Image (cartoon, rainbow, N blue to C red; front, side, top):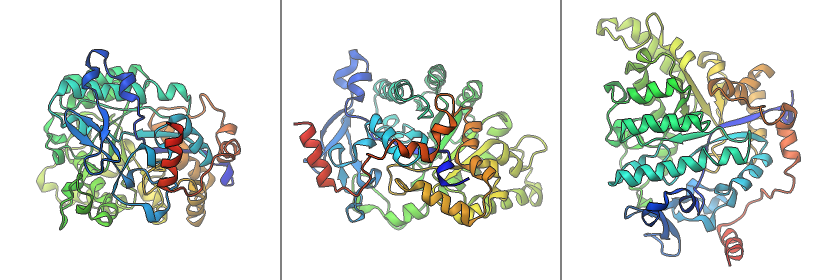
Amino acid sequence: MNLDDMVMVSIDDHVVEPLDIFERHFPASMKDEAPKLTSHPLNPKLQAWVFQGVPVGNVGLNAVASWPKEEWGLDPTDHAEIRPAVYDMDLRVRDMDANGTLASMLFATFPGFAGTHVASLPDKRLSLAALQAYNDWVVGEVPGAHPGRFIPMGIIPFFDMDASVREIHRLAAMGCRSVSLPETPYGIGEPEFRSGHWDPVFKAMVDTNMVVSLHIGGGFNLIQRPTVPNFLDPSSFLVDDLVILAALISTLTATDMMLSGVLKRFPDLRIAMSEGGLGWVPPWLDRMDRHMVNHSWTHLDSLPKGMTPTEVWRRNFLACYITEPSALNNRNRIGIDNIAWECDYPHSDTTWPRSPEMLWEEMQATDCTDAEIDKITHENVARFFSWDPFQHITKEQATVGALRARATDVDVSETSKAEYRRRYELAHA
């Protein structure tokens, strides 16, 4: 195998919702109350979504693809200043081609990665309508318009368990393969997983053969730092702390799932850990396995009978990474079937447009075999999400080389915010 032979599927990418998403998908009888783009509260020259009287803008690090690094930051930005492929899915597929990426899973921006922002607003009737409008677009529209290029993932109204179960079944009927849930619900004031509160959701996920995706972000406030970040005040963020310490949240989340009894009650539940990387896994598994034996006096009985934490991890979990050579050296301890790759487009951690080169270099440096490369780049994802990467596109057409060959006209060069705004204003004149 060489670099151009790889088939690359990313289980963690992000989308900024298109300008017309709520015009097209919000219930007609409620259109006057739908999210609307208006002046940003921190910079009137920019736009922000306003819903139920609450403004939410886009911060710079959320969509830096192709910006010069000196323009990166947490300052507000809007559709005019970001790469159009961030919100235009026709162009997104072209950017995926240029990066040799066959398929992608999309986490929301305005609603929150797991719908946490919209769920926090007071009028739950409107919140439900907004979440369903997003799902109708990202699950009902996008994958059908681009067959084989997106693994459909939705969000649910977790403030109402009955409505959540109904939405899971509705999503399943639309072909959805995963639902994004808050990774540490108690971090946003919701009951923890061990409480049983979430059991109807987990049962519905098992019944519909869908994967729970747990993305870092909602639990950042659980990592106590000298400065408490305020999302309306970019200067309050300790950016380096948040980026570097993010994997700690995945450790908390995985521990919560292991100790909660959820996997004893629902042994077929599958859990994808998103954007937390892999390096935390081996020492965590070592500690978990030892704890079950050394501290048997606590009578912890949270796992399926006769199974160790490592065995449960191997059966029920999938973790993804962007670049992490030290973790690849530990791939046998993690489980070669439990590793997947992510691009994280268009966030500041993304490797786009050089993902194949960076991934290939790490895999060669860590002596990954061709079989291991196939597992990490697409086979594990296909198995875990019950998704056929070659249903619509042949393997020969799905490789890095084949995809890039049809995207030679895609400009991946550095482009400033000012230049994007100039082009945007010309296009919308």
